[in-house]
Structure formats: C-alpha cells, structure tokens
Image (cartoon, rainbow, N blue to C red):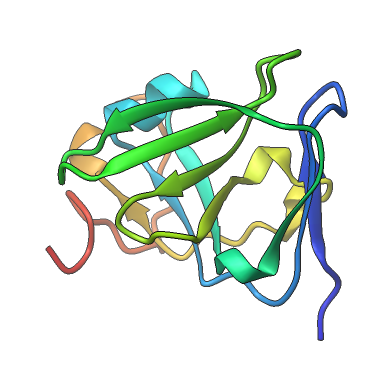
Length: 138
C-alpha cells in the first residue's frame, strides 16, 4: 500500500486524506474548469468516495451543470476560498481533488488532456499525453 494522499486549502481550515491509488489523473481544459481554477486547466485526481476522508473543516459549495447536464459540486474553503475537491454527478460518491491542493503535488502524474477543444492557445499541452476534444468515451 502506498502512502495516503493528503492535502487541504491554503489556510489549513480544510484538510483531507485519501487512501489507495487514484482512479484517474488528468487535465481538464473545459471553460468551467478554467474559471474554477483561474488558470488554463484543472489538474484532476479522482478517488473512490470510500477512500476519501474529510479530516478537518466544512467546505462551502458551488454547483454548476456540466456539458453533459450532470451536477458538478465544487468544494472550496469558506475562509480562504481555495478550491479543494469536486463531487461529479457522473460518478456519485467519488471525489476529484485539485492536484494543487495536495500536500505533495509532485505525486500528480496526468494520463491525458480532456476538453482540449476549449484549451487556451497559450497553454502548453504535454506532447506525449492523449488529447480528447471532450470526455473520452462519449
């Protein structure tokens, strides 16, 4: 078993831990994720819900409908505003962490880029990663 993935917000008000290995790591370039991160993409780390533990704090939530129509609930710290994780209605119960919220973000190893049709022209996409215009499999 590997070390737990731990992380939280900038002020320490929200803390989480995840056991096991992530189900997925990848970069989402959709406009909603760009707005939510204030950057070119969302570096996402997906864990099974039963492997996620909220250790400290209670996040505030913002909900938006994804392009598929399912609800995306974004958890952020009510004190510092840092985005911390997502609940995706397409994968109920699972948690999608913001890689930047990890205590050790160097563990992030993306496997693909998605929604590259919305990628910003100034964003440098890794040339060896697969690229999908939308969600793979749709």
